[in-house]
Amino acid sequence: MFKVKGYKIKKLAPAEFELVKDKGVPVRIFATFKLLEKMDSAVFEQATNVSLLPGLVGPVLVMPDAHSGYGAPIGTVFATSEDGYVSPGAIGFDINCGMRLLITNLSEEEIRPYLEKLVNKLFEMVPPGVGKKGFLRISKNQLKELVERGVPYLVKTLGVGWEEDLKAIEEGGKIEGADFSVVSQRAVERGFAQLATLGSGNHYLEIQRVEKIFDTEFAKKYGIEREGQIGIMIHCGSRGFGHQVCSDYLRIFERKIDSYKIKVADRQLVCLPLSSRQAQDYIKAMSSAANFAFVNREAITHQVRRTFEKVLGGSAKNYDLRLIYDVAHNIGKFEEHIIPGVKRKARVFVHRKGATRSFPGQPVIIGGSMETGSYFLIGKETSLLKSFGSTAHGSGRTMSRAKAKRQVRGEKLWREMLQRGIYVKSASFSGLAEEAGVAYKNISDVVEAVDKAGLSSPVVYFKPIGNIKG
Amino acid sequence: MADWNYLEEITEADIAIEVKGRSFGELLRNILLAFFEISTAKNPDEERIYLTKEIIISGKAERELIVNFVEELIFQKDVGGLVFLKGRFSKIKKGYKAVLAGGPIEKYGQGVDIKALSYHRLEVEKIGLGWKVVLVFDV
Image 1 (tube, rainbow over the protein chains, first blue to last red):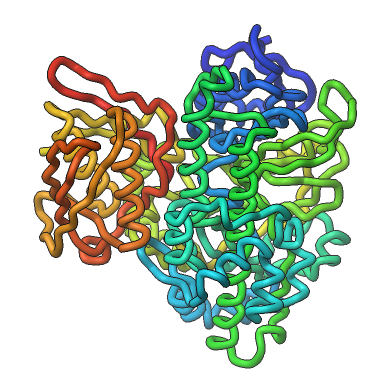
Image 2 (cartoon, rainbow over the protein chains, first blue to last red):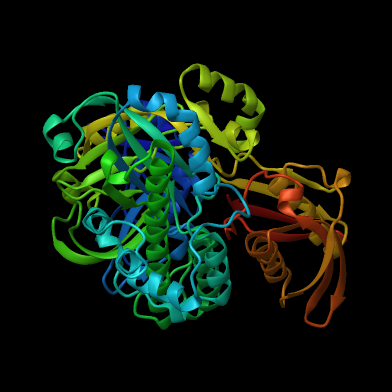
């Protein structure tokens, strides 16, 4: 046993630790010792708060990229029994914030002469930042259909996106049970204003090159065959629609929680029984927001393909541009799992906040900072035994946004990245400074931890050459 | 000069601030100024006003009033593309009436996009005659 930031911790296995405490369910942390030491103390405090929620089955799991959020740390997975509880705040505001990876048949040499033009055009076609409108003009009824029927409706009825994309999206791009009638008018208006836009903060659209292939067989299955091959990565979520859904239901849950005599250590963790009308409405609204996010990423993919056609000429299919996979980060789902530590199979409600589903053989995408690169991985069998089939989602911050802005000058960073062969177009230099590589953990350290812990293993390492930021 | 400051130790990924006011109306005004400065990265004292808008902030208790006010500011930014740098607040029966002055966000520039107000550490404290609140924004 040893202490990190004043918290007692014991080692269970390679890249697997447990918080030593006397209340609540166990808190297990998947990390190398190096990453564990880098976690801020609030991660341990917040994970402990989560472990005191009612109705939990199995341990609370903290991923190697975890950092302090509010309520639950970003990078937390836990499950409640089928007749347990749901906590909107522990799923997160940006419902189905997620990652999507496309691959082209182009090499870096082929794309370099067009890189600046491509990035500038993408910036125009996929508006990042605040107050920008997307290309999709739809009626309220079409928005209802989109959030209830997801990407299949976007592709098959509105003709946006490719039909073959559907099989490469978690849940086929449509979470069952979505219901527009339990979504507020405010969420609808925010959704209309932001559909098919990238957003800001840590959201990005990147042109990347294959830096290293670890698993040639699995990579080949997805059309990745050589170093220098170009991929496109998209990181964004349900925009204002999802944020409003979470805000609305936090308010509703907070009003009701006392009547169920539930005590939570942090009001952001407010929860209600899954059997309550409010919880059932939240799940329907959350599923609607998750579908909004899948639709948003598919619409952005459509714009990426159009951009390639406009800049390089011909049809997008000439450049392959196939969707490898699309995974959700912030989501709650009923799934059947073997409960870690108990080894009993049960249907549970899994909360993933800043964590990726990682079922055996499933493609996983872990996005890093704009300076260091990202990984394409494969889910491992042991993730089902250890983590409710989940893994990390990113590299995780190591410093606050304000501190990053004090340390890094956005304009200088932009020039330095250009010298290193990364062309960035950002809505603001201050936003760029906040997202500097120095503000994040090393993505390769995170991948090493999930690999050692048996959650997922690396297939391909991508490095950015072009980046669009909000 | 608005009375607010960042609290960096609370969250790494998002933004936490502490806001004070000698009265509840001044607290609301300072929240407005903090929201503007974070959203635009501009000093509200040096920026121009393009339009005014009247809103009603309803709520029974101070905490509810603050949540509703911040959510209204987020809604105005997301749907109308508007941010505000001056506010006049007057108490009414069901809460506060606010006359806000500002303009389209593109006239000021983009700072950090505030997307939601979390309930984490959301505490409104009465200090003597004044008020203090901690706000943690999802950005």
